[in-house]
Length: 268
Image 1 (cartoon, rainbow, N blue to C red):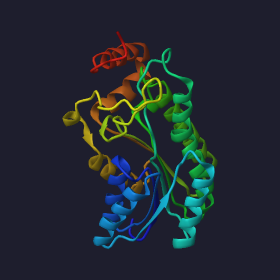
Image 2 (image 1 turned 120 degrees about the vertical axis):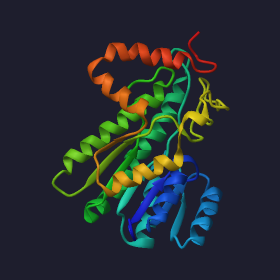
Image 3 (image 1 turned 90 degrees about the vertical axis):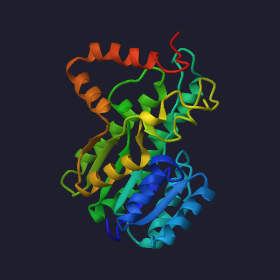
Image 4 (image 1 turned 90 degrees about the horizontal axis):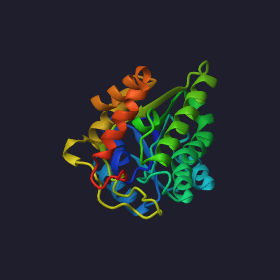
């Protein structure tokens, strides 16, 4: 990653913040996008102390014009784009029969359309550099998770988008990585949306049993350098993806039972 220009969306916290630190450590030049410019500037200042060159751009990935501006400012500053990491995302927790439709729409706007916008505007530069297009998906993009209708839908859609882009450009040198972390110590669950669109607050998961954002970032960076197609993380995640191919009905029951045991589960 030495001197590669890398754009990271959702870089103000969680996996995005950890990716910034990891890619910076490997010598990359970073463009950090998120809605909270103050947090981005704080991260940039810390990275600068280690000699990492960064550009921060206030970016709401649900806004097409913001995504276009993110790419424009990257080119104005660095003149190229080697890697785009579509990381910005939000989650939810509510049964489909209870959730308000605006919640699902908001998740699709962020997780799917945010990836569409940023990828569309960055693609010409990625093709020129024979670079890497990365989507931070989820195990929920392989197996529908009860209580996460909008989240699973958006991640399935993201994966379909990236697979098509990979095939369309398979003879042009473009590398496409779909990375699927399992449950991670990220604030995405703390700010997940409830059925009415409010933030759920404290996560129902046990943080000490989850993979750290820093570990995820390290493994994603390794996968980018090795130009891997897919990355599925955690043993539970790998088993879920594998068993779902051969025993889908059995896995339906396993996933249901696992989610039903969560603290304050929507299943009553």
